[in-house]
Image 1 (cartoon, rainbow, N blue to C red):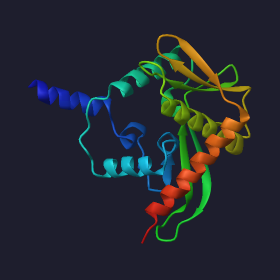
Image 2 (cartoon, rainbow, N blue to C red):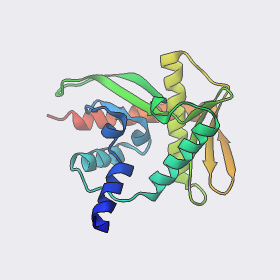
Image 3 (cartoon, helix red, strand yellow):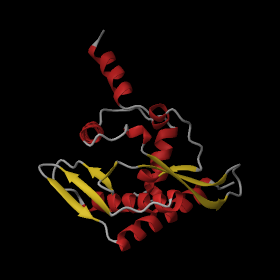
Image 4 (cartoon, rainbow, N blue to C red):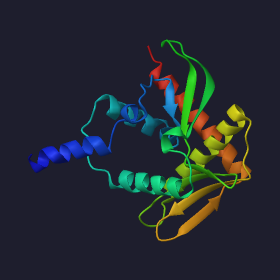
Length: 196
């Protein structure tokens, strides 16, 4: 086998589509929190890229993050990553599409010692943008647990792992902001997708 063909096989195996990884097909009203935290324009761009089936390439950050998540879950004796799923039905009236509401999907990282955690693996210091997205993501997950499972946690931590373990504890205001940001973004995306 030629190296280029092997590379193609490896890229396809290591970077499956969301649908292949989680064995599901997502209609447009099913939105992933980890995409929404970056805003409506970014979400729509990513969706358009996915729909155009733009060629996949090697993604060092994805490999680093996936390996880190798997290791942490193993060491915490936690379930497989694919079972860390939470869903929330956000009321929304679609005018031109055959959907009911918006379904928010969240893949949270870990629950440990009654704390909900979101892990990030920056190569250097986490950028302000990465930190803002992580706060929004964890805030949304906190509220999704509260509303769908009537579950609150003792604390909510973003765990930054690069050359050390750095923790950021979310405040109630940050949790509320993250949740509101994700809801607002989901509705903005839905309005854009619901055009005639």
